Image 1 (tube, rainbow, N blue to C red):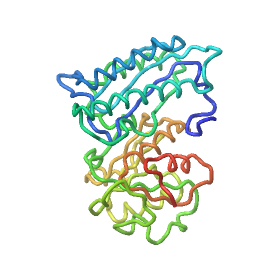
Image 2: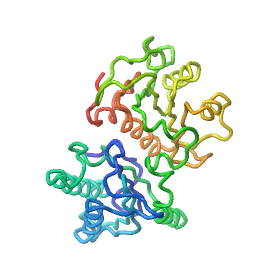
Image 3: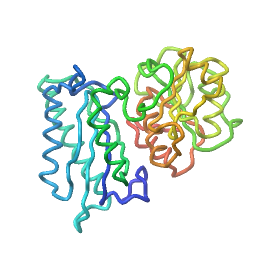
Image 4: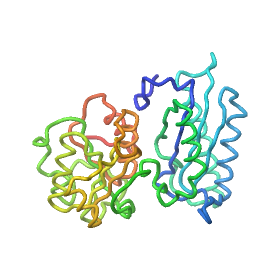
Length: 317
């Protein structure tokens, strides 16, 4: 069965790929950064060993640059075409790695050798990008190699590679708003930008204090309506942009960033076009980093609906 969250136009069984896995809730689990290097703890060293061992068992895949960071993992991987490869061979390899490393983590928790962050070591899925040119490959290798030195910019994951505004907002309990269709006029009057406690929320814990920062891609009409209300009410927000941060910023957004109640994040450089894969990255990031989630109208069977159903715990209407 195909994975609706992967790009159907990419052959994931043949090619070069850049992958990122993020620890659940961005918890620091694998070590610390010191003097521009990542000093790994026992669990971090096990992650390294597991990744290296994966390729001994799978000769169809070739290990390139990789780095284990305190709360995430980056790697460049080459998959060679083989008749026995799975239809989505990259996902097959990553899920095997994820499953085994989670087993190692749970064993360490039982032995009181690492913090207990729940039953899931990793966020619900992983980020991937197809590498198509030699220049992209060298850029990804350099990104991996320099990642420890970039810790202050990368500690919250690849979606924060480019940012503007107050990064401290990422430490707050966040409420996400997502919608894939529908007019702004159809947003319920008790929308998150208008009230302190939004309706139809699925929560992972206690309700956060008010005002709760809103996180969204603010892409659809309903989402843009919520952004406008946040700006009007000076409500803190985090805008995750698949296509790069605009330059210059709209005056109201620039003022919000300079005053510290807004944050713009993007995995892409300014001026980069939007593609479906980065859009999925960004929506997944929104859901993974929110303590609570509320949604507007969703396209039946669409990517957002799938992401909501796959979230832990899943979000229901």
